[in-house]
Every structure is written in C-alpha cells, then in structure tokens.
Image 1 (cartoon, rainbow, N blue to C red):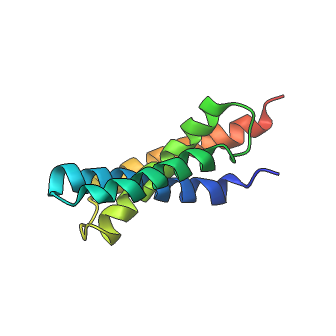
Image 2: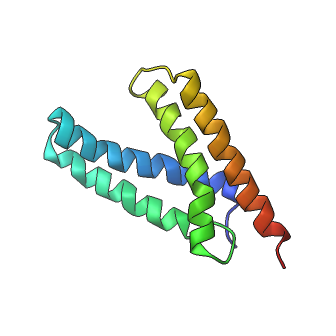
Amino acid sequence: MPLTAALVFPLAALAEIAGCFAAWAVLRQGASALWLIPGGLALAAFAWLLTLTPGDAAGRAFAAYGGVYVAASLAWLMAVEGLRPSGWDLAGVALCLAGTGVILFGAARQV
C-alpha cells in the first residue's frame, strides 16, 4: 500500500537535499570526498521514496513533489545554513505549494 504524499514528499525532500548538499559540501566547500558516500545513499533513498507516492503517473508525482522540495529547501536554508528566507522566497514557496495542491487534488478528481 503506497504511503500518502504528505508523508513521502517531505521524507523524499529531506533525502534529496541531504544528498545534494553532500556533493555541494565536497565540491564547493572543500569537505572530504567521503561525504559522497552518505550523499549517494541519501539520493538512492530519495529515488526509492518517490516510488511510494500515490498515483499512477511518475511525471505527475514528480511535478507535485516539486513544490514540497522548494519548501524543504528553504527550511534547509534556515536550519542548516543559518540564513533567513526573503519575502520573495516565501512568496515563491507559496506559489509552488499551490501548484502542488492543484496537481494532487486535480489528479484525484480525474476519471
């Protein structure tokens, strides 16, 4: 039984961001290349988690996930990088999450 998008999307976003941040840390901040190991595992978890989303079309699931990813990225910005999102960042997140809602709830109404 697939897990709900409300659970899977945030977990997938955390895994994707953590994996990509590991590469960022190695390539842009001089961190040890060993960080690529947990980063790769996190990206594998991200891909697996997206297969658990409800729905019958991968593209629709990925598109709906995008808004959650944007919101999680700004949460990462605050929690890990210690920076505060701007008003423009927050407006962008609101638009993205509105799009996620349209995709998820619109797909539920299709026959």
